[in-house]
Image (tube, rainbow, N blue to C red):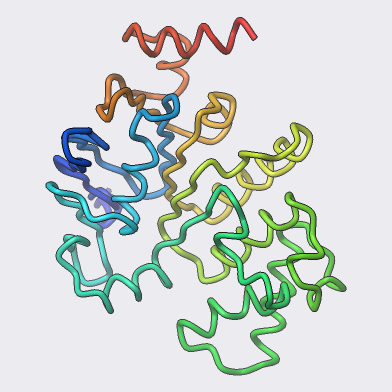
Length: 262
């Protein structure tokens, strides 16, 4: 059987990514491949460098060294070498970013439907009826009632705001989603519901995703593969169950044992 050349190549290839803050290491010499449909979890304690790495990958920070090669529709491109308009278009179409605090990813003064519709308009949608219909459909997919479409996010709970942010990001069918502590700050019951929703959407849409979290239960549920970071460096990586069930590095062993002792 002939192999699909697109599926045979990584969606994202990261090579030697490094970010320094003076003498302090944000992240150092990070390299990995992300394949189409794969979910990569990045874990570590506060200050381990995982959020710095995610910000560099997503274009929110400029690294000092390295490459971030993305398989665009026209072929592999180094995102760091793109023009600013090219990066903006990428972030509106093939990429999406889910913030820990949904207020950072939503327009709080715009209605729920307007938040979802804005991303559609950013890629050229103009027909009001079509935009509203797609917004209504996506609100339903993230378990927000259709009659709330004209409510502003300020009227929503934290969990609903996070679900709205997810709808806003996924409505355009991105190929790669960055998630920064997507369940952070939510009650345990709300976290569980949101994780089930995310898992369903990731599988249904065949999304590739990079998820940064300190919660090993989140990566256990969502991630195919896991990278463990300490002091800005990757100390262990592998299949998620393999790393969590049989950690090799002392730091990973400490992380896993601390969860088991809780």
